[in-house]
Length: 115
Length: 115
Image (cartoon, rainbow over all chains, first blue to last red; front, side):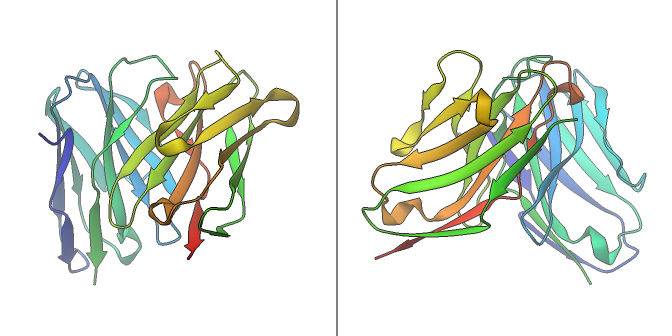
């Protein structure tokens, strides 16, 4: 029944490890996004995908890579984790690519803690 | 590039009092504007959006916002605060053809409701 779901909800790991966060949407949307929310609650877009094609890639380190096996999924892989990667990561989706006034639906977030 | 400024990182009001959360935007083209709410440990939920139709926009939970081009503002109001309104509120902007539909968020305003 959940529109946009993410797993895991919490992720605690050591520096240098590689981890993935999964996102799935059952809304039939064609565009998905990843946002990062830092400790001060500031939200910034990282990536968006439309029909398996990357259409935004903000200035994020190349240790972060989005992977979309199909239109309903957009996973986030992070290599060589650093302390500064600790944040809450939100997945989102929207219906129509290219329509800037289109509502984005957000997942519940994944809280990543790097020790 | 577009930007959003939310005045006041924390706003405290008494239950039953008027809620006013301020948002000013900067954009070189007519923007689309959004207010999202984030309850503790949850994702973001759309309250309302301005898409160049009516300047006074009504949203969920009794909230409304007015787009004022001359003031580049999109302030969020609610006539009577309820305890359940305590949350983090984010103003966001997007523009046609800009950033491929990614939202640019303000830094958020934490709304505290005093009993």
